[in-house]
Amino acid sequence: MSTYIAHGGKDTVITTKGKRALLQEALLKLGGIPKKILVIPPDITRLHSNAGELTRLLYELWDTANGTTFDILPAIGTHAPMTDAQIADMYGELPKAKYHIHHWRTGLDHFGEVPSEFIREVSGGKLDYSIPVAVNQKLVEGDYELIISVGQVIPHEVIGIANGFKNVLVGAGGVEMINKSHFLGAVDGMERLMGRTDTSVRRVLNYAHTHYLKQLGIVYVMSVMDVDIDGNRVMRGLYIGDDARTFETAAELSRNVNMTFLDEPLEKVVVYLDPREFKSTWLGNKAIYRTRMAMADDGELIIIAPGLREFGEDAEIDRLIRKYGYRDTPATLKAVEENTELQKNLSAAAHLIHGSTEGRFKVVYATEHLTQTEIESVGYEWAPLDEVIAKYNPETLVDGFNDDGFFYISEPGQGLWALRSQFIE
Image (cartoon, rainbow, N blue to C red; front, side, top):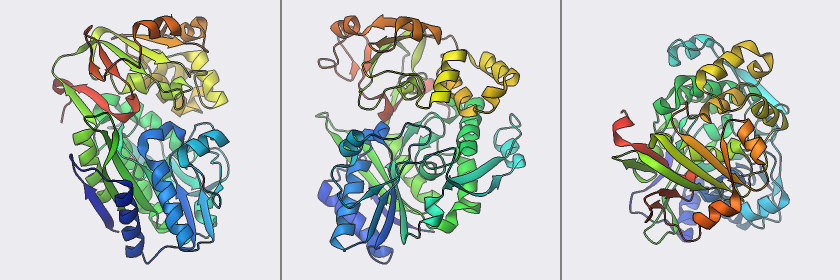
């Protein structure tokens, strides 16, 4: 197992030309550009990951080499399948590429399981179940010369820092892995995981890769993104390899450029959700996940969500969110204990825990499509979108502290905000 490319730093800027050269170098180290390739990039919910451009560059290299098969399987996990417009927005025009839809409940190839004794160990005895390991059957049956996972290394609420093996095992994985890994992260505690590489969920995915997935020879192309002083999104690092160490190297850079540490808790935070990315609270609650470690007790989090139309990306998960709401952890765990439908949908239960403030601070959603009744029914407060935008106009606000003293975040999915005193190493 190897690292083929490890290029990056806090002040590094990798241009398009540089990305192409690094990708080509990695492919040459692997023996040349294959004829038959499967690429597994994130979907539109990771629009700012630069995975779209990296996928296009891989396509151009393949096309120049007269390749025969360039398949794309967006790692949607539980998300809704991408529309044609989203595909064009994310990846551009790739006329010879063929897109496939991942179905997390069907069309899977099953390997084995992460045993219950391992889950007991990593959860500190909080959970006692095994986790079956399955991925989309195309990875096994597609007869590809090379499978490439493309994605961004970034702080994450479920696993600590996203990407690496997660992009395949969850993004193109099966229902049991998605459900049980998410629930493990929620029960273990978000504050114990976020921004860290060695977490209970990461250990589960590393186990699954070592014992089952390694045989597929997947190569992981991982970006680290940042915003420069002029507000431009830039790539600070590109890491390509097939082992856990490559991810860990990328994660160290992400910790340095994607985490904002504060000395005092934030009393008021305003977050904007880009309507191209955020159509559900399943995704939009990143505004809560990524700020909770910085929020003051009794503080206020205002979420401007012009594209919000639903709670869950999946119809069944949407129904469960509407039924049970974002209550505190004890209430959700009790609901899991008493209701079979939540036991069968542990990722939904995990999401309810993630989306709760545990009563510490207030969440106000400003929406147009979801009604006041709908927002309040799941445990949040509501405000009219036009009134909130009139007061907090995203076009005039600056990231960080604004003149009125509130803290603004334009892209909650691109970082983690935490108090230094609460980030326990």
